[in-house]
Length: 438
View 1: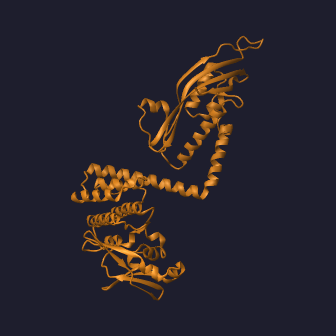
View 2: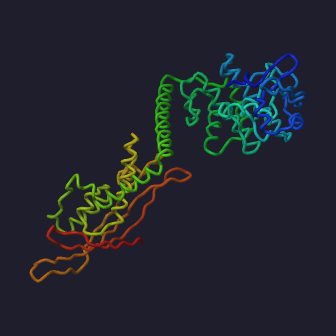
View 3: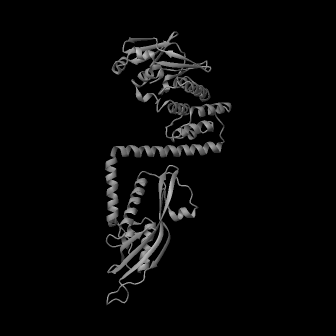
């Protein structure tokens, strides 16, 4: 649906074509609609534009006001405006919005398709309520409206219209892709302002005015070297692939979120109980001495090795560690099922590389600084030459990561474990772990 489908122009009037059924259903009165004012901004001056006549014409209600020969941004692009010419229109809009803001006349909501640009540099912002009736009553998805207050709405409008210009002629231009990737030759200042809006720190109208003024002086665009163009194209393709995967996951979770949660919990439970080891016997630690078994246990914890943990313990010993490994394993397997990159990073590897910043979704895991010592004592049966029960103390740090406002952060937790081991027919097993965090 284009602007032309709801705006009718003639030499003496401009009319908004509103579906009569929608108009009647809204219960709006003609007098209230005719009292609503639009604004014509030209050369630093503002004058009102108002509806002077309303009439029914077939299945339409026509709300007519003074003639204004202007095009919406969509119409301008469709009629052959190049991107630099279209950006000049947006520069004039930023100036107009700043002027209206200073006069206290910024609308509460602004419809992108309710803004018309004239060839002489003037522009018309149609009355908000009538624009909403004409646009959204017919096809809500075809028109963008911005609210949240006049200033934030105006800023969001500028970012969206800037994106519309840069998306012209692109095969793919989803809103989740940074403008700096979508149109890498765009002036850096403009791209940065538009991309800021997607992160909750939208630029002000004054900032847009300053950025457009500076960008226009530089021609709005800059040239890219062949190497820069190639590198940006690769980044764009990578971003598009990542976005599609994210959207696929989102749709899947919306449709089957409850089922998937149940499956994840079930998988974690199965892993925690060790039933997955039915497909593999796991390691045989029956020949290890007690200190070697303790070292094998923490090696399995460091490597997220569920079967290795199971082979070291008896009963419920190490239940918390097994649950921890099970949960991380489920997350890792689900990511792999979706084709995501493996962003699990072992703590020792991360530390050896100088603790570099983590990307989105990174998971740091593992232990460091492991020190094991045997506790004095131990008990033996009358027939045994060596003790059948032994105790050990393990000191180490366990690592994890989590999302924060400033990115992904890493947590290091110091631990002291007291382990009790017992020797049986299958060799030494850990039968109890008591844990404290100093």
